[in-house]
Length: 311
Image 1 (cartoon, helix red, strand yellow):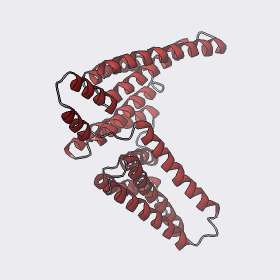
Image 2: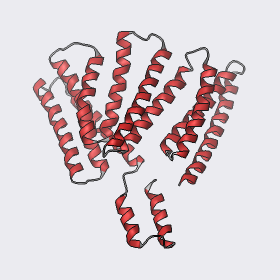
Image 3: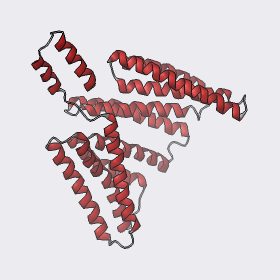
Image 4: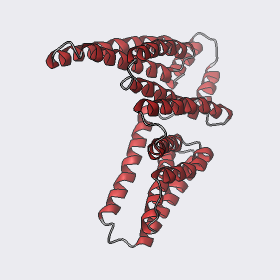
């Protein structure tokens, strides 16, 4: 339940005499307002841009900077990001502030590994470096309970999986790689339930969302590389409808959104594949545009209606 819904319910309960004003204030104090999803998204994007900007500034003067100065700079930035995240979290600063510090601390180990490999002319597989990056971020993610660090950890793991599969050539077909990512997404969604045993229960929502979204996207793209795509997408469409219903009954709004996005992708993709061989290019673009607009409008209208019922 979001903050606005809770405040509305408290006002209704207070007005109907079900609870006193003091009890209402106690309920609101027990569930303080948190940074919104858009604010957290802006913080993550801003943090990534800041790290990228620093990297580009260093790269522009790369040859003129001594090797030890480069390494020391990365270590200093890593220390500053970690200390800033820990201290702002300990002092009760807004979450968006300390998440930015932990984001920097989670990304910089990769830059440090790249720098060390270049300075000392180390060779090896990219997957090995990504594995070290994933392991380096693990303690930060577990000890801080940072959503940004958890997100970077998942991204590092996904990159490791992709490069490892490419280097070993175990899976040679695209659909096999897609199914491997679907399995990884299912593992992430399942393992994220362990966050319920910790004070950082909100990370369960993030991990579950990313895991389920990975499964949905991987299975969707698998249909582009197999002959029996219609059977796969039809099954996936029914599963998406069931997932929407299940998410509504459990009041998991973030999973409702995944279901609706998947339904929209399946409808649009199926339409393109069925009419692509029967119409000219202009007609395909016009009709597909109309179908996409109507599908997006209809799904958004239905989603908002269902969300309002939950609220």
